[in-house]
Length: 479
Image (tube, rainbow, N blue to C red; front, side, top):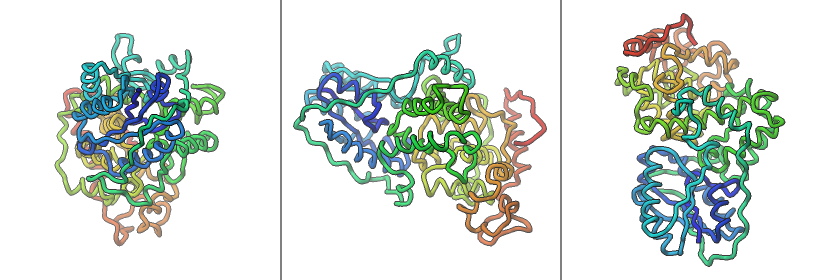
């Protein structure tokens, strides 16, 4: 008997571990409920709900192939080895198949599981699935992990030109195992169910994810370079929750983009090229997570930046969290996050830079808050994005580059449509004043700005300039 231990791979199409298990013989599927671990990792309630909804769909998708889905409880990952061994012993499992996950805790968990199973002559097979390239195989000439995305991307392109990772076939229908699937819980204690309106934003199931990919590639990808930064329109794929949960694979995304671009990576449809770059950014941050484990331990990638004197400003932090900073683009973005479990990528950079630079609050507090609310919460991507914005990470924005949120708003939401949607109290302001109310244009019910943008920008530059290795030359203009 074979066992696939499901984690962030909730699909039957192009599932490497599932395909490998089914090739070897009759297969069972297993999912572990680990609420204690999820809380330690700051996983959002809406993300847990998304997993459960996708598990219910996956259970139905596995049924025609004769593969039962078992549910077991392992409060923390330290309990996983014993729980998995008990399942193997109860059902005569000889081989356990997993798709690799990355991060210190994930790697320790899998090593502990493999060690215990090996003592009982059960083999754990780990498969590359979440990424196009296994961490440790895309390296600099000196054998180190890349620190700069553009150099990493160049090597990835060279590798992809020599052959695309293939898509895996669906499993064959197997003979009945006589083992019944378990019920999928509708909720987990400690993770309250999100509003129905949020669930409706993110329907469960890989059929929906595949259709969303198909529609994006056919309709929106051509205009992706121009529309990806405009939050008032659906110019992005919005596939990140499905990728994070493994409801769709990165290979499926890559193959779909190339099929719409005559197989070209760096020419042809600029939208396809731009979107493939985003897939490679996702890849890059997971390689960073594996190659530089300190980022899994809440450490800055650039050690010198650990000395930044962050402000202890709980009231400012709360205003940022609740979308009441008095800076409309920041507040609208945070309200989008709270209502939908998702935030437009351009706005993630804007609000992260506002917190870490204008408010000079430790980026880790923002990283934690995002993880506790994002339906697509992913340690590597979230950490990479926050450290980029805070100028503490690999390939990060120079410390003196501080987005002006009003300028960003005027540039990417010219008519104020996004602002008026999430901040209805500003709906009556004209297209200029809506980006920066206050003073003569104060609006009843909307707060005054909690910080002066020019002063706070200089304060951040001064804080970073005091670091021992802050040697970049400051340009004259703002961004």
